[in-house]
Image (cartoon, rainbow, N blue to C red; front, side, top):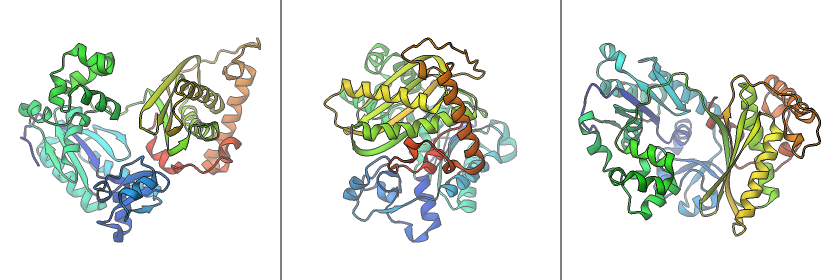
Length: 419
């Protein structure tokens, strides 16, 4: 589908369709046209055939089977996901150096400087789609627009396996009829709050007075969404984009809100996040946890520290304390469906301030104390062994001896962005 064509719409957003499931159907042709899910205890990804039954990523496997009795679960070929994702993004790089990869299966590209070589943006997008299909055997949807936000929305409208080009003269007419959940930053909670106020489309959101939207969603979110609803998005393509935070999450299905469940999960997440922070020498000062309950309602808690941290055990202990606080404030919640840890306010050139043993209550969590330094040295030793022999070669007993995790580590590694 094409909605107008204008040479000034030069930003592409390319997104591989149902990527993990599409790869599985590519590797095993007998799965093509059938409802499949990657995962087991929890659905990591679903094919379009499964989505038609209501199966979604993050859904417990039991619920997915109830919705789709013929659902086929596959374990996942994670090296193939990485290989094919890299190859698809490389196709964009054959047309322009201005490529901003935002995940394993999607990227932005600005083709303004190469139209004299390859034709107008819509033709470049068609060529990219043909090449990805012919060379890799995968479907890819592309949106073309004047701004990044609108290009991303256009690629969602184009799914599955389509192309949408938005004429700058018709931007608002195209945008304002679409459902509000297509906007970047509108999740299930924001969608529900907006719906309660009678806001279902982006046009209805755009018509809301700024004060009303900010009271509903908060100042920062309200201001940002109001601008995006009018397609005010000045962001340029960032080819060397660096994250301002590092995080990981674990979809648990439906598990009891008990320490025997959340402590091992948090320690595993802390191990992942802290390892990445140390690899880039970018510790952070703010630790945030997110707890999602059975009704999909989420609660977030954060703490900002005096010194940046990147030690696994320190991060894990802080996260555990925050989750205990969340559960204490919500005693009626007995089931957890997801846990997440993120670290923000990262520092590029951290200077560790050594501390004397003063008997402070949080001394073991302070990086500059003797205990803190010992933990950091232990982490570095683990990092060195893993770098040489692989992630599974060594680990912390509390993580390695805990029950198997619902989301395979290989999938986590693909989902976690580079710092």
